[in-house]
Image 1 (cartoon, rainbow, N blue to C red):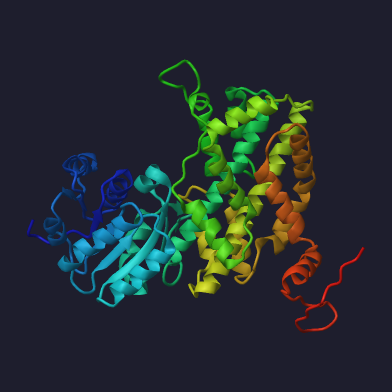
Image 2: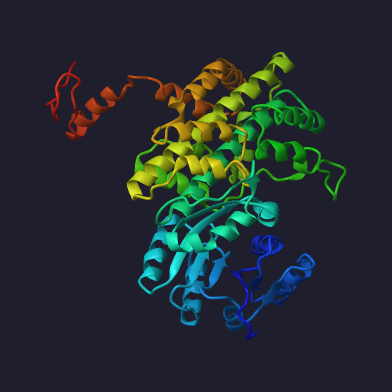
Length: 473
């Protein structure tokens, strides 16, 4: 292939990579994709819309030779060593000024290293989060790029064209320096973990606690998706309850093993929050519950020891469903608050200059955690770009105060009946602790000083103090 006329190249033609390229071609850009699997290269061309310019290749030199300069190349390969391997393979074939984009879920610390490594060699590198799944990649994802500003200005028209649109606004924006794009995507996925955990808890209470069947659950989630809980995750949950299993006469959801998979981004969020000393308990517990789910054999044995925990809830059904709606809404707000607060904290710590107003703006469409709440959050952050926690806004304060009573009732009912609701409980405990001026940490500090001479501060004068504590009878 000798003619260098393609606008954009993709390395890795799995479903996401292939769909992203086809999306780009539909918007008038000429694209070329590379995959060592010839069948994937052929599928790219076969699935292309008639009249678009799409080419699939299996040879790296042909791929590089087909691209206009400066070359714009995106990688959608597994995170970690595969990304580094691709970079090292292609560096000898690139020219200074070429742009490499990592569109996978790489850890942001790896992205920072790659940015500086390639900058020293004269190449542009961007870490870019992409959310929306297979359908989003094909018809409009939320795109989270960060890092090299010169590279962003080159690819901006293409990314704006293929991204999701909300009220005509593209769901893509430059999110800051260095690894800002991958950092935002990491926290996005942490929020995703937390909201999914919360939805699972409401499902457990309605399905096992109230005995609702899948048709009834579908109707409830359909109704919820028409109000203040309207979101992509509520929408797909509604649809899941109606999916038939093609192997049995059952609904598919009832045939799926209750062991969760994970690709690590939720865990990374929790780990990084701990290194920042920033509390995100809703995300932390969601990660822990996925981990706990894997111990199916132990859980089964424990049930045989402690007895069947399934209890029918002795409560007015319609009233409890209404309370569940309000509790879920309350908890989801807290999930967003923790994640957005972490982004602000991480941005400051790493000097990434992430604009939260742009983060919530581009999350409004295309991404997995899109919801009507984000329109409100966008207005809040547009008015106050330095707000440390969205719980301090008047709108959110009113929403939480209007729903906290119902949340307490749901948690009390669930705990008394033996149903685990760690996500809902974590959201309430976070709220109760965050809004409390005084916490019992004075006693903790006294304990630390008693056994380890760790010192403490006083409330009546500045300074650092230590006491020789005395034993009492």
